[in-house]
Length: 214
Image 1 (cartoon, helix red, strand yellow):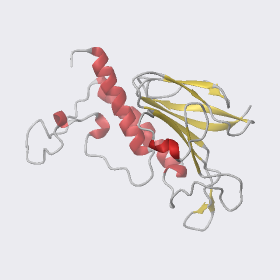
Image 2 (cartoon, rainbow, N blue to C red):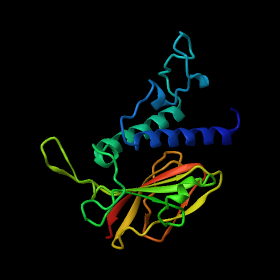
Image 3 (cartoon, rainbow, N blue to C red):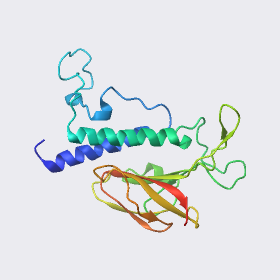
């Protein structure tokens, strides 16, 4: 497109899709060149085309290099944190009487979603809390696995949403690691506390990690 706004939205959606992929459970799968923005012109079945449609373009534009940098950040984040590649399914309930759940789902007002609210077709924004403290898994040598706690915020709406940070530890703060609304995809240095409002831009997602309050 020759429309800068359309190009910017496409770049943001690429960041959204790859971030969602790499921060999901299971094995992330890429087609060669996805990490550089290769689209095959929208053709998802170009196996028989030995031409520029299916070739990998190695001389990258500045935008493609920026996107590759962002994907490398995603890969590093996933590799460093086992909460993004658990060995077992989430349970969504108190773990062995610990009083903490391994996963929570939140509405923009910061309150936990009910079962009934999952069927609301007008919902366009939600948050998910992944507890590294409540994993209760062991590595190959039987050693307990623990990780940081993460909050992932998703907004598929065409307007920005003020997302209220849930009440998850009064003595904790949240650092923003990723925000796909930024051209780099990297978050700010700002910290947020429970009850604070996070400006979640239209068609974007943010990734926060919980820190002890300094």
